[in-house]
Image (tube, rainbow, N blue to C red; front, side):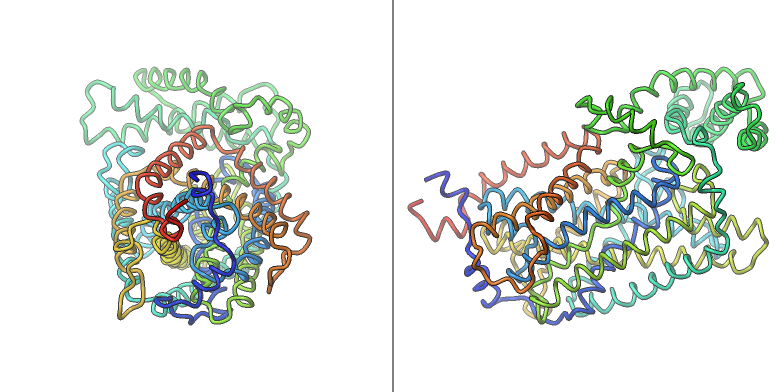
Length: 604
């Protein structure tokens, strides 16, 4: 009885009845509106932040291939999402699909997992929103928000909270409570603005691209693990250093970071094998003026570099993610060596790790399926919206990453605001008024892009909660309440907005990004499996949209998305396991007892 209960499935007929029942959301979204929602959810922090970070630290110019791999993984899942969304046009996305194929327990697991994708993604985007806000303020000549008010206290010494993140999340919450039509209108305006900025970046930036940045930088010039470790060690050293006032720790940490990096790079440039390299001559000239001069600084830098060298092998292993923990990296390192080149300085592992990270940039296309209940003609419009938004964004991502890595040597890319800073730097170098102004325009577009992502991810999260509440797995009064006037899940939206504001204000962004990625990849694996299972269990069911070559697309989708999961750190897998364990405790404490399916079959 127990097993029958937790693995009970909904029939397609039940889902169809839900879509036609009372208290449904308003059907007002057509293909253009759905595609706009998809593009609005996709283009945001990913293209404006992840591109620079992954290019600089993980893949180099090979970030183009990372986007291609991540886009391919998403495309496989997109076809499966499209088939399911056309068959079951109700709120809930992968949660609903799992309920129809794998049963209630798996549905709960996926619903709980989707919180990582939507709610945590909103917190992540809000966390980096402040970076581009400060870029825009600088261009306008307005003092930026102080660092202690736009950073989390765990990764930035002396920081209090990320205040801009809290304010933008609260603003988005207010807009979403008003209603889907108003939210869609706001999103459309933001999408138009950021698309214009992205096209501007491509059209104008291509004229400043130098192919030497793709092919002429020696692979030995890639960032080494020590360069990523040094800033943290410098901060720790500054905090422990005697005679340093508390309010001077941050400045001292920055000084030590610059001196330690300069010492490390000059030492590399002075190696015998680099003596005749034009690249290393340039690097030495650039950094030799920052070398420490007094004995105190030299001693501090020496201590920092010794510890960095000790930690470097562990960081290399971490770069492989779970692949390294399983020992598979030993075999793959040979592929790394064979594929390493000036264009792929980090080799195969760099491309795959980059794909696992830039995957964050694609999160959002599946949010369209959560709005199936609000689509005018879901059987036709939802598949169009999913595939069109994914296709448009993949092309734009590859084009923008090509422009940025072509304009700036990948090791010099500003990881906080890559695109706007690239144009600003080029403007200063060429004294171009257009490029100087472009930095501000791009920062404004980035803010618009990230704001629209916040709107859609919040919108999607509330729809997941709504579907779970209707099934009795979440409290109906909180997550299932629909406002009489606005016809929106207002209570759920306000609760989610408040919680995510707290998370964004105090949590390090790197942890959030990895959690979002693994949660989404897991959901994609389940959707690919679910559509395959339903093809076998219900081959006669009406499918307005059919996934092409499903017996190839779905298994390959499972394999590719699982592979990307294994390139994420072991700690991220551990956090996912803890998150799912907490979810199971909530299910058996509440959902199991109040499930609508259980009440319908009281003897089970």
